[in-house]
Length: 265
Image (cartoon, rainbow, N blue to C red; front, top):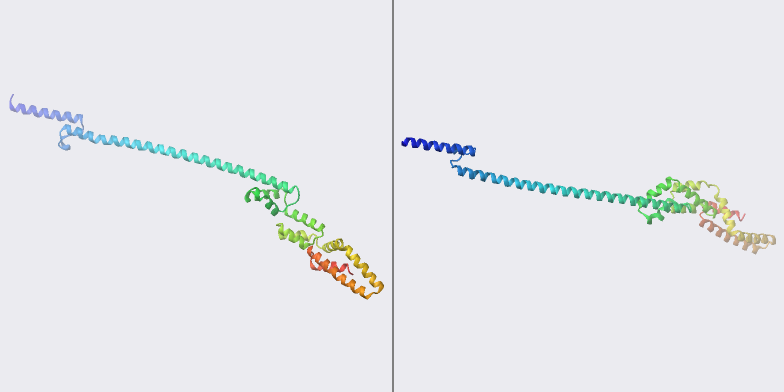
């Protein structure tokens, strides 16, 4: 074989090898860095391996994040359920407390009239102020409790025992009754306080007044000057006792003077 033919055969063989290399490994030509085929193959593996490892890491991280999210969601749901259960328990407890206080208030009111203030004092150890206020409001709205009715009941009771308007007004105030309610209640008895004062004195001092009256009459008949002086002194003492008594009973000054004078006319 001629040398020229050998060179041509060698060149043809080299081109065939390069063509085969490009078919097997596209993009790896002699222009890409001048390396041989084996270098290109190694480089290809070096580039592909990090990409595969990164994919595994990213996939693992995504799975961890999803698991963490599921755990957080489960924890939130559990906390929400516990909160709802706690709220429901608190609501049921408040309702039971309200019902118990309402019934307790009814029990007190079945015995006598109470002012709102008095009931608050009696019920305060049975629950919170908020629940008691709610129960008292319901008792009033349902007609079981009334400050006006209590004021009238107390006023009648004290009048029957011979107490005057000042005493009754002070007691109404101490029981938590508003001044407007107290004034309206007492106004209904305006004009009757004098008769009440006379009746109270008559009940308390009738024997003393009768004894003085007999002594005074006897002194006048006998014309005994000394007896008259004693009688007048006894009158002043008795008048002072009557005035002090009516003042303690809560009668105003003008009624006290008029009632005392009535017994010594």
